[in-house]
Length: 153
Image (cartoon, rainbow, N blue to C red):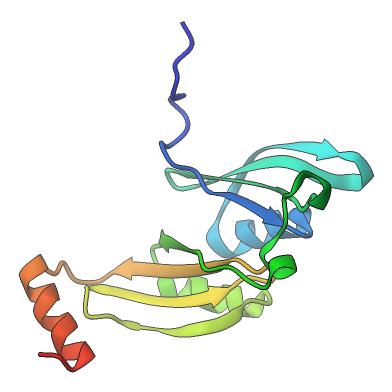
């Protein structure tokens, strides 16, 4: 019997549309350590579908295809979505991203919620938060710190 949810896929998987999927695969591999699971070619040397493994997560992606209403963030004025990824060393990943052509959105710093994190926009218009947990902060303490950080406490 076929399983409704395959064993080798997480319950939720982002699907990214990019202009230049082959270049995006190279970027995600060099910056985030993604491993390509497989790739299905499309006419014209484009990527019709690809899957990347990052730790225990999967990202699917394909080249933009406006005729199928699949558009990348740059073609629609940007994205309100940010992908959050935990990494071993957020400073190193952030620096690799910037060196590979990403745009800095928020510098890497220790945050009130216990992560050392920063944000960048990759060359394909997708936004990423890279974080490394540096402190386990209980919810009550996090609330206090949030109030202090926002000036309401």
